[in-house]
Amino acid sequence: MNYQNRSFPLFTIPNDTLKIYVDIDLGKNRQNSIKYDGKTKHINDYFLSKFKRFNYPDIAIPAMNYTSPSYSIYEGANKIDSLFNEEIKYFSTYENKSDLPDWFIEMEKLNLIYYNAGYKISSIFFRNQFNEENTKADDSYFNFLGSIPVNNPKAYLSSYYFEFLSSYFLLHNLDKIDKNKTGFERAFPILEITLPNVLKELTGSTRKLYLTYVFSRYHQNTNKASQVSKLDSLFETVAIYINDSTLINAVKNSGDAKIETLEKISFLSKGEKAPDFYLSDINEKYYTLQDFKGKMIYLSFWATWCSPCIKTLPKKNDIIRKYENKQIEFINVSFDTEKDKWEKSIKDYNISGLNLICKGNWEDVLKTNYYIQGIPKYVLINKNGEIIDSDAPSPGNKTELTSLIDKYLN
Image (cartoon, rainbow, N blue to C red; front, side):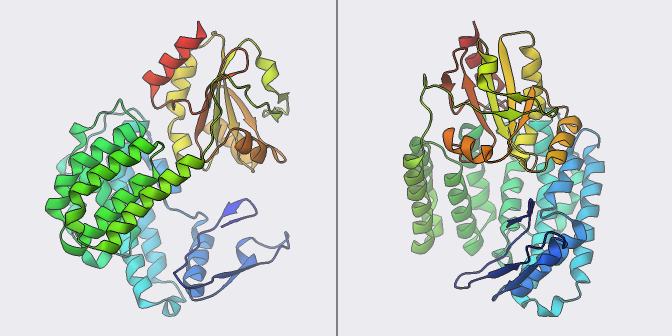
């Protein structure tokens, strides 16, 4: 839930209506302005109380800081442990714990355990993929896995358990991953590679629920009908291990729903005139596309709260340096509502290019005109202000992006 430019966590269950009461008196503290009613009232009270204590909706926000090159992999793990220990301590001493249902208490304990373990594993991937490090950890780093049950039927309510499993199985196949590929072309081979480990180490309900989870999640990340079909073909080879018509239909329905969504999504066609804007930079100077006539433009739509956006910044800065003094403008359009936070991020991350921010209803206008379903979103525009690619490659796919730029730049 978003309220006064802040995100607050919500928890709901089937067959319940969660009522949220918000006092719109702007003079009041945001957290104290929110009240809940419904079957999950006490659960949401707990999350709101935890938000007041830590001032963030997701522990990944501060934990991400410790995956930077400023910390060794071991220092980062210790810092991440400290964050999780604080959350565990808070949960154990939560004054209204008696109001929480037993099943939720057990689930929250498992969430904290598996989120911690999964994050320490995935921090290695973050460093190598987004910081361009060559991070490796010795066996002692993974000692914590000795106390973490991998095949755990009791953890079926914990989404963090399934996220942990994804990181765990990927960990054993890192040497088989093509780091030069991105998106589905990188993710699908990972799924193929890890499936034998999944079938070997998971059994019974854990295995069938994890297979349902992972294929449904992959459907969400497809952006072409051909990718959905490819995924469905692989699913047919493992459906026998699920042996549950309800779960099998759930996976198939997720694929059908994604194809239906893809059919409705529109894109700006190559050669169309790129929609204009009127946006300001840090110094309140306003720009339109007409200001860059005669230059190619690489538009990046992003926000400070978007982790994938932040992760691509170092690679984008490298690409900007590569084309310094060339006839191409790199424009970063932010959907942030907090200008101070936007300005701070530009400085903290040393974001190169022209940084612009949306004011008024410009965010809605640009999302509509550029058919933006999610961020980051990249658009390449030619020197005449016409679309080259309205779904351009990410800076993370440097080879494909630079090849496309070079093709139209000269």
